[in-house]
Length: 90
Image (cartoon, rainbow, N blue to C red; front, side, top):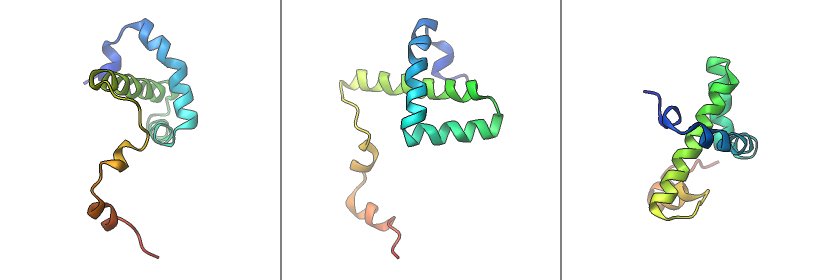
């Protein structure tokens, strides 16, 4: 119900606050999520907490899998035939 951010250590959440602000500013995926949540609730801190949770979940996943961050991960794992079907032709 509350997600990962509700159960994390307060020191860890404090450490992820500035990276969440940076992710909101420079990453389109996080910025879109932030803008959508602010429009829905009107509470900026609630939207920023959501980004913090997403970053913590991403860090935990990368740590467990011993992987490096790849911003194009989703696009690399799409089969070529499926990728061609979703293209919009002029």
